[in-house]
Length: 601
Image (tube, rainbow, N blue to C red; front, side, top):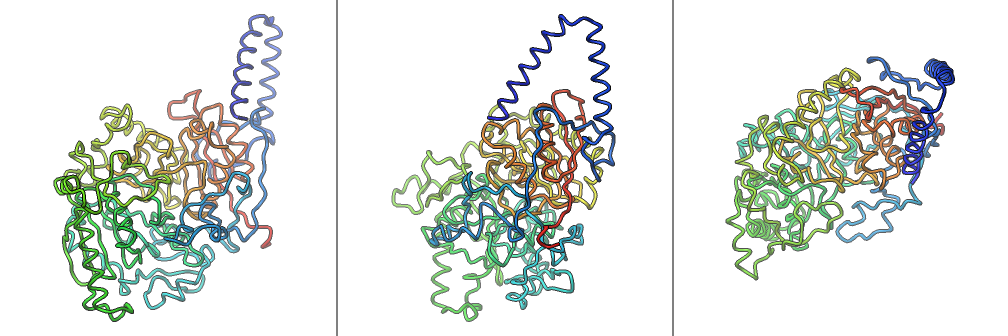
């Protein structure tokens, strides 16, 4: 309401100003202009200008003024026990929710009256993260000060503490001798991992994301997925290392991804009970896998003949579990593709002929989902025990028909036509536009493309244009599509990029201090009727690393208000022209300062 009121007042002042200039004598007008010039000169050189650090080094900046609509705000510090606060997956609230199917680990966001309006402090002794690619193998202990994995998994070589650092040897439950040899075997079983056919993957129960980290060197972009927990901090370790990751769990709701999106899914002893509850967890993997995509499983019950003694079970029980799994996979049109040692690979049917039996057999289980269930609906959408059959009109979405990487990045995806108003011409123009914008951003913020920026989030993308324009830089981009916007996320995945659905009226599924750069393109303009600006800005501050950056592209009307809130967050900002020097749109280039909790001083 405040933003709407400000808009009406702004329009009213504009009308009044236009009317008054018609009757003011020229002499009075000249005096007013001289006075205004003197005032602006003092404002530019005076104390009202926001001070900047790194963000002031690139080019000249426009002043961020204290206009009537930009009221001063400030926020207190949260207490130090909130240093790893994740509002929608808060262990403090777990007792309020049920334990069945681990639903307490799903998203449960606080109501408006319970939202925190404070700045999340870093841990005592926090340092700027080690830069990529060195960060892949080590991080500062004080940045993620949790020893649980180090103590409980020491024999599996997930990580080890050496002095002030955690070292990541690349081990895991199913690959204690190193992830590279494990992935080498996987590539022997799936040649499509070597030639650009497979570009995107998801790792469920990712540990410290060593599998996803290894795949980055092989040109495969992985979303590492794990739930929030009290001690393990798996996703926090992953992001501290510079590896894409997100908090999440397959429980009672769909994962926040569209159907037919990932080229490969992976579970390395992730302890997900795939055959229980009507097979709904495996049905969700089926939904998000592209036709012709691969599901890789290592751990129980694979290789049960040789492994069962170490699993505290019987060979008969594990044989039964494997047969149940195979039958379930067959019923949803997966075929065993390859199997060797501890790794088994199944492939989702590349076409729809296999699914005909679901329509012809009323007793088939799992049944075909009815048409009322939108395949891409994935924001607080309940899991259902039915098969999402790929649309027959999509003839080029299967893995074999999708162009290989990197060609697919700039090929017009078939699903762009499903976006209202979307077409090939618009897609090409969008790509060209973001190449121009990215070039301009690099002039304003030279840190882009350097080792200062690794983890990037495009908070409200359309087709992933910014990520595509930065693809040759040593960074990765989490492309976020609003759950209330046009459904463009399938196009993002079809290009070989990664992303997620989200509603910015709520907190994002990540730990604090996990992104180096946040990019906003008209988010406050488009969401101002639903989301209160201060809560969105507080969330941006929570997930942005100290000394990290934000590029906020907004209407001129909102720019000063955003800058005022940013100042209350202890950010330094400057206002810049867009690449087109539009009067209707401005850029704010901001940097978050490193500060420590007053409780630890």
